[in-house]
Image 1 (cartoon, rainbow, N blue to C red):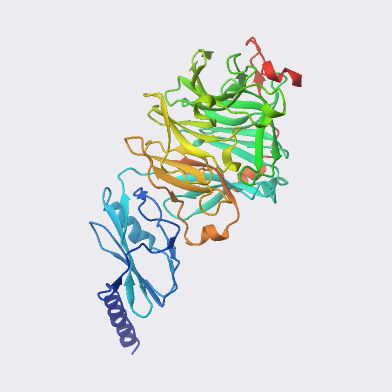
Image 2 (image 1 turned 90 degrees about the horizontal axis):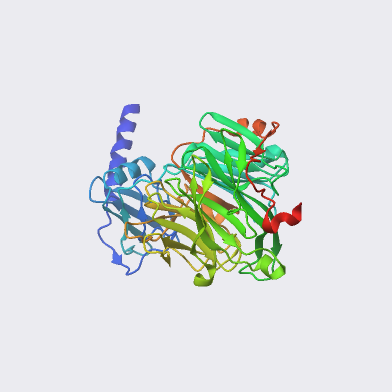
Length: 499
C-alpha cells in the first residue's frame, strides 16, 4: 500500500511537470517584465551565482523558462513572484553555453496567460574572480560605529565575516587591499581601538604601529607592489565636513598628504621629495609591471577654499624596486583639462588603461552624486567616460585579473546606499551594462540598510577567520622604522606645520 501511494505521487508529479513544461496559449506583451534587480541585456561571466529576481507584477501564477543553445531549459512554475533559480541547474547551463546568449521567458497568468519580451543576456568566456571582499557599514553620519569586513563567494551566496568590529569596542576598520587579487597578500587598518596595520604576505602575518617620528600619521590608502615586497601608503591629516547640499552632503579632505613606501622584509618606510612635496599626494597604485607608481596630486592647503574645493590631477612616477630610486613625476591628466577632480587610479592588468573616478571636488567620491568612472588610455593619452555610468554616484572600483571585468560601487538602486556592480570591459575599451551582485533573496537590496565599501575582487578565499582576527587585533604592534638615509622626512613641504 505504501509503495502504491509513492508511485501515485511520482506519476502525479510528472503530469504536473509536463503541464508546466511550456505555456502554449498566451498573449504577447511588447515590453520587458518589470523585474528587480535589473538583469536585462547584461553581460555575465560563466561562474556567477544565479541571477534571482522579483517580478513587480501581481498575478495568479508565474512561469519562467531559462535556456540557451545547449542543454536543458530551467523551468520554474509557481504562485510567488520571487524567482529563485536552482543553483546546480544554473551552473550547468552557463558552463555549457560560454559565448552564447542566455534567454529568459517570463509568463504571468491573470485572466489568461501573458508573455513578456524575451530577455537576452550574454554569457562570455572569461570568468570573474571567485570572491568579493568588502566592508559593510551603515551611513557614515548615523549609526556608523558598527562595521565589518566580509567575503562573499561570487559563485554561490555564501557570505562570511573576516572581521567585525564589535569584537574590538567598535573601533574603525578600513582600507583592506590585496596584491593582484591574492587572498594571502592582504593589508588592513584598525583605528582608535587597538590601532595598527595588519600585513599578511603568504604565511607571514604581523601587526604594525606605522606612526614614526618622521611621518605625520599612521598609514592609510595602500597599494601593493606586484612583487609582494613593498606596499605604498599615504600619510595624511584627514578630516571631513558636512554640507547642506543633498547631492554633495559630505566632503573628505586632507590638510596635507604624502606618499611613502614600506619594505616588508626590512620593516622600513621610505619616501622621496618627489612624492612628499608641498602638494597633496594621495591614493597610490602600482602598475602591474612594477615600474610605475600612479597617484593623484592636488595643490597645497592654504585657506578654506583650497581645503574643501581642491581638485586633483593624475600623475605617475617611475620606481625601481631593486634600488628604491625614483624618476621624475609625469602629469598625465589635469583637473584643468577635465574640469573635475580625479581620484582612485586603478591600472588594468595589461598596463594600458587607468580607471579613475571624477567628481566635483576632493578625492573621496562616494558622497558626490556627480561622481563617474572614466578611462585614461595610456596608448592614446586620451580619456573618456565609461558607458556603465548612471546619474547617481559611481565610485570605488577594482579590475579583474583578466582585465575583462571590473567591480565598482554605485548608488543607482536607491540613491542612498552603495552596492557592488560588475561590468564587462571588452577588447575595444568599452564597458557594458552592469549588474548588481546577485543575492539569494531577490529583494535583498530593498531590505539591507548598509553600504558596500571598497569592493575588491579576490581569486581565492581569505583564510583569516573571525576568531583569529578578534584576538590578533589586540596584540602589541611592531614598530616600523623610517629609513633615515633618505634626505627627507614626510613632514615635508605643506606638512611641516605639524612639527
